[in-house]
Length: 223
Image 1 (cartoon, helix red, strand yellow):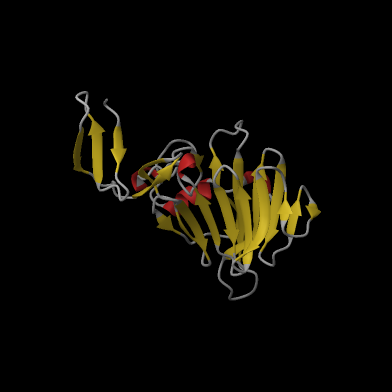
Image 2: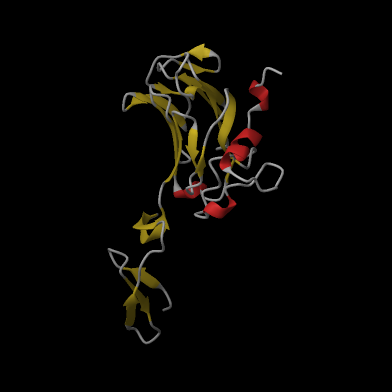
C-alpha cells in the first residue's frame, strides 16, 4: 500500500491503495528528463549530459550555456567536485591554432584520475602516466581508452566519456549519476542553465567566456 508503478511509456502512474485496488492517473516526465529504467525501476531520469568544445573555441555546457572566443592556453573543462572521491576526474584541454589562419581548436586533452594521468592528441597518440601506449588500452578496472568514430574515447565507469575528434572537437558525456556533482565551465549538470556562469570564487560572470578564462589551468601555465 502506498507504492506506485509507472507505465511503460511513463504516461500513467498507478498507486496501490490500502483497500487492495490501484488508482491510476495521467503522468509525464518533466522537460529534460526521459522515461527509462534505472536499477530495474521505470521512471523519469535526467538525459545524458553533453558538453562540447567546438573548433573556433566555442563551448556549450551540460545545461546549455554557450560562448567562446578563447585565447591559446590550457583550460579546465570539467571535474568531479569531490577531489577525494575514488571516481574523481579532471579534464583539461589545450586550445590553440596549429597554423596561420587556422581556427582555435583542441590539440591535446589531459584527463586526470586518482590512479592515472592520460594525455590524448588529435592524431590519436596516447600517453598514460608519461608513457606512450597502443590502443585499445585498459588503464584500470574503471578507465579505458579506445578509438571511436575516427577519434579517441576515454571512458570511466562512473559515467564519464571524453571523445576527442581529429578536427579538435572535444565532447564530454556524463550520466545521471554525476548530476549536480560537477565543477568547472561545463557546468554542474543540474538542468538549470541559470547557474552555469558561477566563477570558482563563487561570484557570477557576465558570460561563459569569463567562466572559462577563470578556470584556465594554472598548472599548465608558462608564467
